Amino acid sequence: MRSCVSKIIKWHPALWNFISANSTIAPHILQNSSNGLTLTSGHIDGTMLKMYGTSCKKFPADEPNDNHVSNMLVDSFGRLHTYLRISLTERCNLRCHYCMPAEGVELTQGPQLLSQSEIVHLADLFVRSGVTKIRLTGGEPTIRKDIDEICSQLSNLKGLKTLSMTTNGIVLANKLPRLKECGLSLLNISLDTLVPAKFEFMTRRKGHERVMKSIDAAIELGYNPVKVNCVVMRGFNDDEICDFVELTRDKPINVRFIEFMPFDGNVWNVKKLVPYAEMLDIVVRSNKGLERIQDHPTETAKNFRIDGHQGTVSFITSMTEHFCAGCNRLRLLADGNFKVCLFGPSEVSLRDPLRSGADENELKGIIGAAVKRKKAAHAGMLDLAKTPNRPMIHIGG
Image (cartoon, rainbow, N blue to C red; front, side):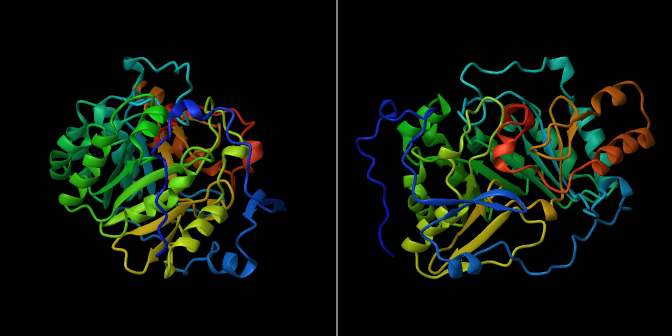
């Protein structure tokens, strides 16, 4: 394998203007397609794009749990939604550029956030209706003092098969043994750079060593794979793609390269976007034996294995090759709002009717009506950049 270790010894945040972004872009072709505008790399020929394109084996549809599958989880396009993402808090111990505006955001007051009992109550309703997987997000979910009790109650819901969490890893290492005991079965850790100085610049906080410690702790506790989420941004960390791939050589790590996505306040523009085709090109040129793994139809990632590597590499291509046709995800926000699409501005409150004494059938009616209004696909990336949406810290990662 050709070495691809970044030369960043003299790197310093002041040398890089993240907000304006690097204006030098590798050759791309902007094309119109049925999915909107897409970017393709000039380095990958048609044969390779076809080889690594958005095709997947025709697996049977998601098997529902042993509970009755409610019609409320099926949208007007026949998609069955068995995956619920629950944001536990809007608060975070980092201040990442792509998640929170520099001026900060107004946070929902404590009494307006869902309580532990309300979270479990709504989760139970979803699971009894057919949801089989729950992911806990934030903000940063580990800063909730009752995170272990929430995990314990959710993991004991009859019919739930998977309880996962996305975390920044800052305080995870010490809490993870207990969280595993409480039923946390899958783990994603967000890390956008392997360079401590870059980490401090991007997150406006220190803590790189603690995140790396959490990754190692997760491996030691038997999480396999440990998923590492990396949002790739031109001029910031696109020179580290090969370094991240190297993490998978001797450890059961699944590195997930994520296309930079637009949300309120994160100053998104197309110049910062490193498209899937370009990221794949970099990996292909530096690694032999890259093989596409056949993905489940509801999988958001394009997954690859590399000869000689214990771990795997994936790409989340929300901007250039969306995966809306197989979407099975719903979102419950920390303030109790229900959101059927990450990029859609539409939300409906479940907190208010719950606190007003709505019974189960009334809640199911509200949920089902929202699911039925879900669109076939989100807008193209340039339209998304103009569409009002909440900051990512409000929505939940």
